[in-house]
Length: 557
Image 1 (cartoon, one colour):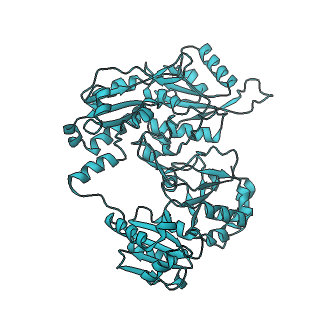
Image 2 (tube, rainbow, N blue to C red):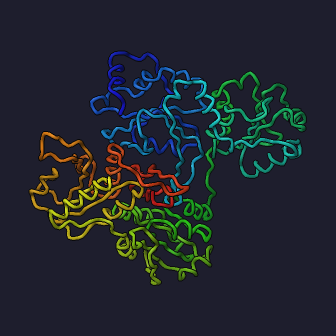
Image 3 (tube, rainbow, N blue to C red):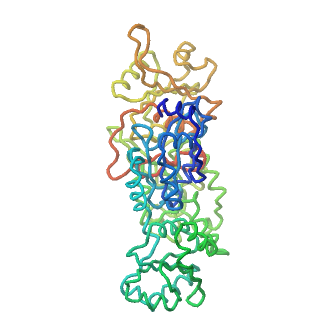
């Protein structure tokens, strides 16, 4: 949490500078936009106190780090700066998804976004660095410029830098309905400003090319395109239809952007039946698997899968609306049950391997030491997804602890504290454990969490954990506190309860958001991360969680 001195300082001193470019991020939806963007983002991460939430985050950031406005101004267009408040008192709070040990912190997003194979949602990894970097503007600016992606600019060298090869390149791009942006410069490689331009206009029907003037064919290309001064920038619809930007107008990012923008168009999908088929395969809800990725993304994942192996007739009748409805219902109820599809027409071998057209459930099981494994797959097929739901939900392994006595409860809490785990208690009047509660434990494998289920608790027990006696359902976390040595009846934990009126009904996305916020505010020791896989909670924002399974790695989270 940001130190009080900072908050007080802002109250006592006004900030005259204002930046239209410094973004403020307080919700998971706003952070999701950052994670799906190709542009470099540099985020100052804070956690305000609830009573200070009316203060401007921008003012807070600038008062704490006076160098920030100048850095931002110099890198305008190249890097997007923002300030993030992860305080849990905010609606749809971001939470400490980066697992930051201390705040304030500085987080950089520099890689191009990737597609989550389970949801189709775009995401990208981030890197946290010491916030002290803001006190070294020169080093920070150099680091951020180097972080701008190079993959989106094609640098012409050798044989590719001749007029003949360049003409061929332009023809190929025109056939693909792309226009070509060409920068010719004395610099050996594409400068940061040009690379940033390419990231901003990624997927906008433009192909960015760079040519160093020392390349053997550069002079002939310049002569053909009538580029007389350097740096020279050209927009080409073809070799005979192009526009040259004067060198004096290439000094700022806004000038380059203003030159390129009229040529940019979002790529539209093909029309007709082919477009309809493509939309299904590209849908963020319908995930089609191939023989190449099925074993890796389905069989080796820690998720219960419902896979529909579709014949051509079923594939044609499939609608995104029906799939989204089923996926949303499953996610809200069970969380770790995912849906996928296989085209038997395109993936005949994979389809035949699993018994031909039909709906099949790929369950999870437990090893002797309570580790997840892929369960036994039934050879029987269901006719529809709806018919398979009950079997899939029943296949969620149960790692919860049933509490039937006070002794059981005391033993559970002692065992959890002995393992330095976060004890979670779920009170219910139902005779069975809801699937969302089973799914909760499987969703945070890198966190030390233990969950006990108490059926039909008496009033005294409910009162002990601040649960209303009339409540039929309740979820509480026992967070660590310091025991009072002067009060022998005090307990070494506090109670954080799920507030239904504030957080919504009990469903998987809502309780997961609550648990992640508790873990962020009251961190517990983590188990070692799976080798070569980073844990990322970024798909667990409330909006996307309503319909998508929140997994960014094959290990569920």
